[in-house]
Image 1 (cartoon, rainbow, N blue to C red):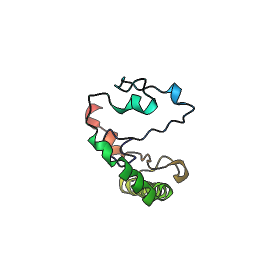
Image 2 (cartoon, helix red, strand yellow; image 1 turned 60 degrees about the vertical axis):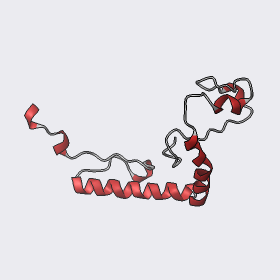
Image 3 (spheres, rainbow, N blue to C red; image 1 turned 180 degrees about the vertical axis):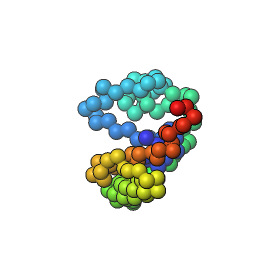
Image 4 (cartoon, rainbow, N blue to C red; image 1 turned 180 degrees about the horizontal axis):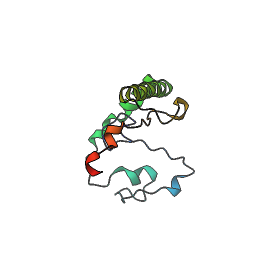
Length: 119
């Protein structure tokens, strides 16, 4: 999740509705076990949590950028890039623009899989 949130590795944000918190448990028991939902996830004693200090700045950045604007721009870049590759490789894009978000599938050119040495 860190790369989609524009944060250092290991940083993420998890929201769990108070009505569902009783269903969620951390994979490692923290020193805060039994002290409430947040305390159970805070510290397992084996990590450097200094990278989490960027979390609020990442939230501010996303609010400033606007999620819809970022998603729209990523979609446009994806389509343009896929079409460019397909054109240069003389292949095609596997799916229509309405079927892709920020990733697309472009068929590889024949030289990538045509290996006459193994024939």
